[in-house]
Image (cartoon, rainbow, N blue to C red):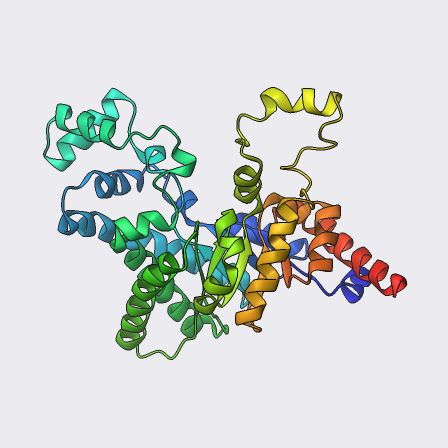
Length: 353
């Protein structure tokens, strides 16, 4: 593995959202976190009532009150991650689940939440019904949450910046938070959310008397974002390709449902492999190439990575090397595979020259 690390030029990070996975990935050679999914931090029994209150609140004030309860939890998580990373970088993706995933479905949970919020059970059920979506994966999620509820982005920015500043002071690590805005499809979306993040971050820096740097980028997971990457790159310091969703949206089928028919496609030799396991270089890969080229055309210094599970597949890693991405990010136990694949890709490129 030491030989592989000497040979490769592609960075290898991990997808992790807790200190345990972070520690394991670093033991396996990860050079930081390429994707920290913050919604995974909210499903804890202690925390989910507050996020439910936020979603179901009728006013900004009520939402902010609910979100205030989450700041200590979120900040504590980030601090633990930064301490485990010991100065290695971490890209934090802001909240990106469909809202329905947080809502109560059990009668006892609905009753308990109604009592805590001081509303009737009937009112709460009606509100849950209003928030129901027919296609939640393409619904009210990602940056759309921050556009509708800017207070979510403010809460997450405060928690992240305070955590980074405190760990930097306590441990002496050179921490530069990387903030990733998900599901961008339009440059004005990124600008809108980025303005909220910058305003809050600068406020926290002033309060803490800190000169900490931070980077703001986006996840490219909608085909329109790939095609308009030159415009989006003007407001982004990095792109991270979310190839799981980019594959779904490009092929037009759901990762959760595709298993019902993909076997027939393999048997009839329509597809040779699962496009969610091995990157489709002809279609999805072309969008990655386009986004990389167009992004660099307006922002030559933009950093480019991939954080879908394709980041641990050898053929996909070689594709990322050939396109000129800066790093791949994959689950902890696939880190050694990615390191080796990145080295083999670099050697093959050298031999071909």
